[in-house]
Amino acid sequence: MDFFAQVPKNCVSSTFNTRNAPPMKNILIIDDEVNVGLLLSKFLTRNGFNVATATSGATAAELLKNNTYNLVLCDFRLEDTDGREILKKIKAEYPETGVIIITGYSDIKMAVELIKMGAYDYITKPLYPDEILTTINKAIETQKALTEDTHAATAAITTAEPRTSSKKTVASDDFVIGTSRASKDLVHQIELVAPTMYSVILIGESGTGKESVAKSIHLHSNRADKPFIAMDCGSLTKELAGSEFFGHEKGSFTGALNTKIGHFELANGGTLFLDEIANLSYDIQAALLRTLQERKVRRIGGTKEIDLDVRIVVATNENLQEAIRNGKFREDLYHRFNEFSINLPPLRERGKDILLLAEHFLALANEELGRNVSRFSPEVIESLLNYRWQGNVRELKNVIRRAALLTEGEEVQTKALPLEIYNNSRPTAAEPVYDNGVKEARHDLKNAAMEAEYETILRVLREVNFNKTKAAEILNIDRKTLYNKMKANNLDK
Image 1 (cartoon, helix red, strand yellow):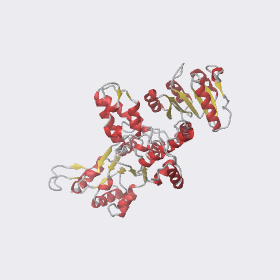
Image 2 (cartoon, helix red, strand yellow):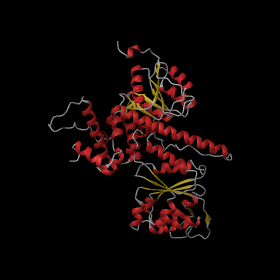
Image 3 (cartoon, one colour):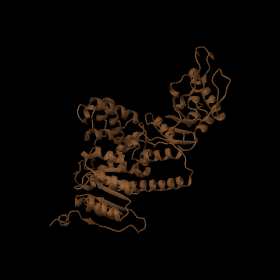
Image 4 (cartoon, one colour):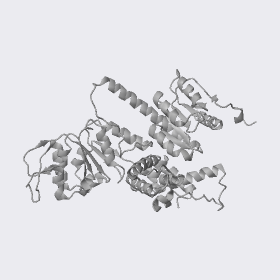
């Protein structure tokens, strides 16, 4: 008789009582496919976890009531409930427990929605051991950090004087909190610096959402109910910059037909965001430095000095330190701005955040166009995840708006994507050829592992333009190991 057939339905295996146990890595697996639960349990137990399994929502609820878990792996489709209800219960009653959703390809849209509801991540069937283990370890680490932050915040709130606040969450219409490590680090830095008075430099490629991050810093500060003024320094001429920054009085120069209030004055009490700061002329940089030092502004042609209380956030996609060395940017102004810096990750380093953002932009496009496009086809999802996204979030937003416009039904197909995205999505790696010149059998596990290694190394090398130092860092190996693996896979040629 088959072993799995002997296991009764709705069973619980590997149960353990943890209420009074010391903190350990305890995992609950919820899946009504008994063999999946047992295989996962054996695999995770071998990797040092305490594992309990349940094959129904009711059994899982009982286990959650009597035990403490670091993490729950939950299949989205269960006979008596679904992943959505399990997640709601855990978030409401056991907020210190992380949740990973197990899903099939057809349920990816729902998995993304569950991430928005608080799930850490999702993994798709078929399940791969390395992916599972990596995702679980990251989830437990992240959940631990969030729990510690929550406890610290609670302690701070109980000891601080109560005050009225209009503070909003980090998320806004333009800023989507992702699930990747890079996104979580970004959110943490925003939450850390927002309540301070520090000036902030945002560093990132074009289209990574620097203005959205600046707005989030503002909304998360005690200035949230004050003005947020954004200024594009890249569009300013030398002649107009002074007037735009500081304002002018009527008749102060030819063409000054009316009094103009400058951006510093408009932002008084709030936040002034200066984008593309490296494009300012040296003269304007000097005037900015003086204004920031004195905390006063005087309109061009005026005599009255106006006291300033402005928080400064600047952004650049250029290397300001290199600009300093080349004499194009003042070092003293750089240090005035650089009280805190945040590096915004490019979209290609944010993994499954791409799908979260795509879903977000699809919802916005539906609202804008009056459409009801509800999902992406598996081929579109693969193309979105594999494309390099040189234009980052801005490019993704434009692609999704275009796709929504071209889609007639409920599902976005590849024909709605620009050709360069569908055609340039990650190619399948060629099968490795060994010394005898013959392709080895794909079903051989050793060769399958070599193929996977070949494809991973080649993909990372392409993503970093074959910069071997960066590739080694991303792959978490040293350069010598990378060279050896490249040689073994014929990639050194």
